[in-house]
Picture 1 (cartoon, rainbow, N blue to C red):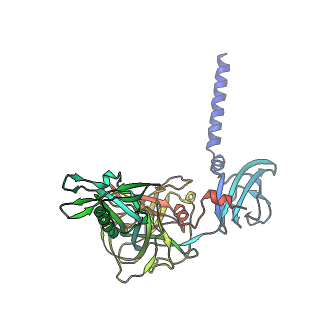
Picture 2 (cartoon, helix red, strand yellow; picture 1 turned 135 degrees about the vertical axis):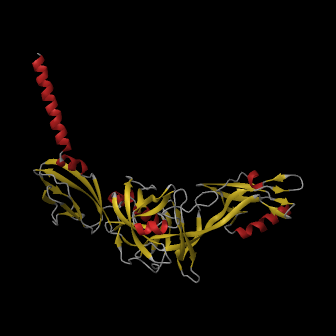
Picture 3 (tube, rainbow, N blue to C red; picture 1 turned 180 degrees about the horizontal axis):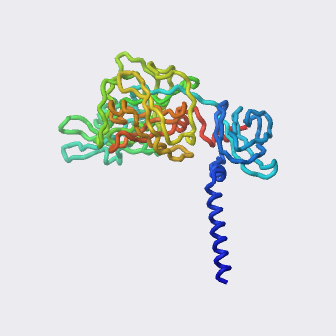
Length: 441
């Protein structure tokens, strides 16, 4: 009896060992990596290497894509060799693989998207934006004859609120606030405000108070209507006439609230010097707007992935003015890459980096990758990533894959990057997967 149990135990161990060997074997591992879905740009062939020692019959819609250069709907393929797919027209089809032409083996959803190429940036740009209203950035108290009051607080206004209308009139000019306050104060009335808070809008009344010290009518608010700074151009799409820059949202310096853009412009800028980054203290590019420098474009949107707008032509000093293919988020891999940026005057240079971590994202989200500066020349000149470098395009394997967004304060040689796919969606020149699928034929 004991011998029988011992024999069964040995057979069980052998079976488990064989199963482990099978699971760890290259063919099984390659099968596990075989994608369920594959997105391709029209006209950009893709070669899949899975080294599986099997023959199969591959079939798909030949109007959408081809297999191994064939235009037939069904092709015999040897999966021990590279499998080449040629996207022909935008649309969706299923690549069905069957062993011996009969046994279902794998079905891969192929989504072909119109080809998209852009010119990578790297130029330092000046950014001026005017908000779509008057932003509340603080409260203060007004000293009246009777007491110290804050009309803004009494009106329930919060930091980050955007006053979009006063007495029914659109207002985004801070210079008009004083006349409104004086008129209402002298008449003994209140200002009727339309306020935007996040995605919601509401109405409130604010009665100005007379400041005995300044001899003027006050709202008890610190307010702002514009912002300015420098950043880096990420890409220019000449066919669509649009650009993307910064890689992150512009926020108000006091409230850290995203600025709702009413209007804005980007201009040519010149880097005068670099304050080097060090642990605990990020550096910055010191740059100025060029006197008489032409306006490069407008600012239409301010999103979590940067600023976007119209631009008629690429600014000067491009590293390479040629069109470059872009990468889907799933194409970005850990390993060597490069960034384009300016560290002196207006010269765009190329520097080596390492993509040390890639976050799997199927929908827009910031912090898509962690990057590390490895180029000794850039480390010597900047200490790593500095403020003003955000938006610097990230290039890998000849494709634009993303943009620099943030620096790690305690490790300035490292920082975050976002995927270029999300920037292209916010620029309005690339459909998100759901939209692309719904338009497929």
